Image: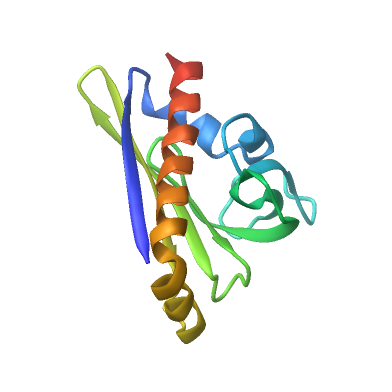
Length: 149
């Protein structure tokens, strides 16, 4: 109930972090989340800030809004947010940035909360959803790389 993808980008960590932490630009990169907006007067990626993302599941539907909370926000190093409840998110998405050679290794990952219902879902559909998530993470990171390089 976890997976990750790493892509090397010939760009400084701070430049990459600017893009991954600006949720209002996620529609430019993600194949599923086509827009997002800050909530409750938030204007940027501070821990505890909330935003909502407009998702088209699997790029086809259903389409729905989901509320997220920023869990980690360390410029040039990490950006993470939880989907659903701020205290017990169903899924945590994370970007970790590590300086490497001429740029940055960027790792996007997801971690599903280990609830009984999600374990059953993952046992039945994990093979297909896992593949979709991996492909989506790679697409997102490749689109970001195209912009920063």
